[in-house]
Length: 225
Image (tube, rainbow, N blue to C red; front, side):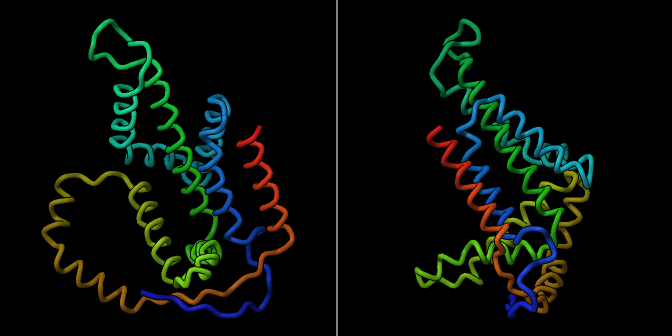
């Protein structure tokens, strides 16, 4: 699978912002969330869940269900490894501070996951690939192929969105899929050989630059505020 790029017929895209701008906002959110007080983190998570549920009301629940074991492992690791006051009088009891910190970590992970699902539902996959390619542009200074880097990142995000957006398969369905794996894999490989994407480049507009400036100010306020 590969893609090619072409010069734009017009500088602006179909959306209000360039696809790189909401992706940059998502990255900024990942950096700023741990710096906010817990009520603000809770409000941000609720807003992300609401955005994810706009297209499909069950999307936040399905996403949380798919990562429930990761969330449980994260909560357990923080609860039993963070120093603090024990929840009950026992040497092996988790700490109150660890449970709180683990819950906040899980909340932040869910917020970013819900926000990613909302982004993926708002624009086409080609648009997000263009956004990733734009964000990877500084890698050209290191002599790296930004087309390949953006494509790999896009495929990773696509697989993450697929895994967190579907209902968990039943054991019978999983067994049938594994039994038919050689045939399905060969068909999938043949399909990927013929897949090609052509991206129409878009220029950052004044509103994109303004949005990036607001994001930078918000990040500075979160870090130094």
